[in-house]
Length: 140
Image 1 (tube, rainbow, N blue to C red):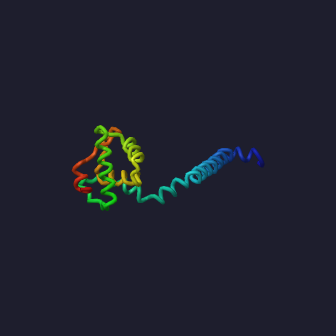
Image 2 (tube, helix red, strand yellow; image 1 turned 30 degrees about the horizontal axis):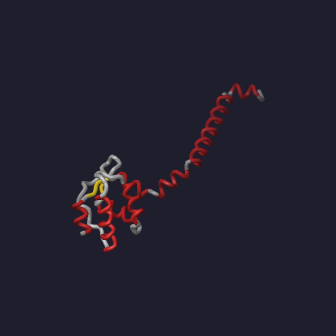
Image 3 (cartoon, helix red, strand yellow; image 1 turned 90 degrees about the horizontal axis):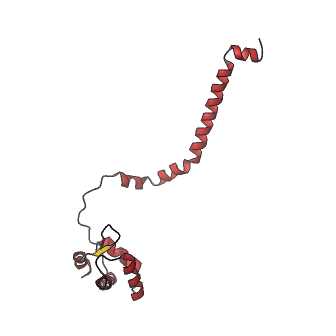
């Protein structure tokens, strides 16, 4: 017995189908892993950021005092005057616009520093409040 009869008699068709399926599945897995390797490498490069998200949130304590130079204190006083002209809560975008019109030096940086210090606090609805206690602690 030779040829196709021999293949059929010894389960050759089933063996060839299984072999083709194994090879095809392996090639599909290989192509998927190659197409996603950039995500795995990016995840590996930023593994420290992932650890930050995995840590349990700690209780919020009093923030350490940020260093305020005389320029930053003067800028904070100018922002306080601008906030006094606005309603409470105020829009950060409008405050920044008023600071640019007023000619404040580096308004974006100063505003960022005030937010980090807690002098300007969000109300979690899109507006902000001016924290007078934090202002007195840092800028007076």
